[in-house]
Amino acid sequence: MISRTAVLSEVGCRPKNQDRASVLSTNISAVATEVLAVADGMGGLHAGDQAAEIAIELVSQYCRDVFPNVGPDYASVCSAVRALYTAVNSAVRLRAALLGATGDMGTTLVIIVAWGSLYLVANVGDSRSYYVSPEIGMQVTEDHSRVQELVRLGAMTPENAKRSPFRSQLTRFLGQQESIDVDLFPAGPQPGVLDPPCALLLCTDGLSGHLSPEDIAAGLKAPGELAARSQSLVSLALERGATDNITVAVLERGVLSSANTRVGPAPFGVSSRGEI
Image 1 (tube, helix red, strand yellow):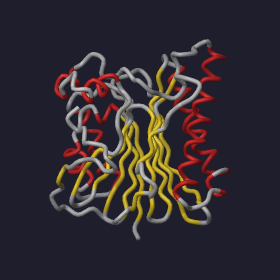
Image 2: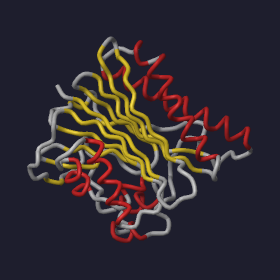
Image 3: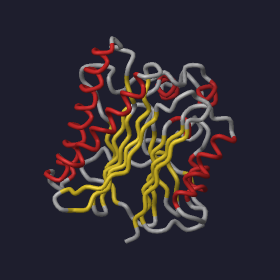
Image 4: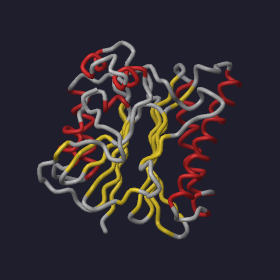
């Protein structure tokens, strides 16, 4: 089975890039495993850098020291991923205390763990994951943001949320509190299944704030190498006025065709939010 990965990051119009990303290879019980991670730091020019770097460094550490000793069942992988997020949260809070930035320093973190044909997506914050196949393109994760809470409660329309000055205010991020809740997808007792051809994309809000699931699906299904297709998505976001840092990491299994992709509800009971 063909498996490809790509990762890239653009500073945009910001003075510094506070996004971080990685694409790593490891094993889960001797099963070849790919781990992709994207983090978007916050808390000032230097604190944001450090928070995102802490997250990615700990993902790398878990790939080296922890995942090879984890059982291949879904419950064991979920437990290891929760432990990873707890470690990142504690490490960010410790660094914030040393810098005198407690409460202001933090990071988002969205990851994919793909072992064999199975996968898990985990998320805290408003960095996102999307799933694309020849038939469908959808948002997997749910933003932990103030406007998303208002949309879910029916107190704000998706169109107003898109223009809201509060759209970047997060309700959950790593470093925020002593304990952290992690969203895992699928939310049920079984892992997701990668049925080629398909792709999972991770991105920061610099991309998702300007591209819909339709845009992402079309870009990933276009001809060319995966790196070039990923770059085309970043370029499109910049053309549409993106000013924030933009980071993308993609895992593709098989080769996505040029068939029309239907945009549908996100899997595992999470509704599509491409309009926000």
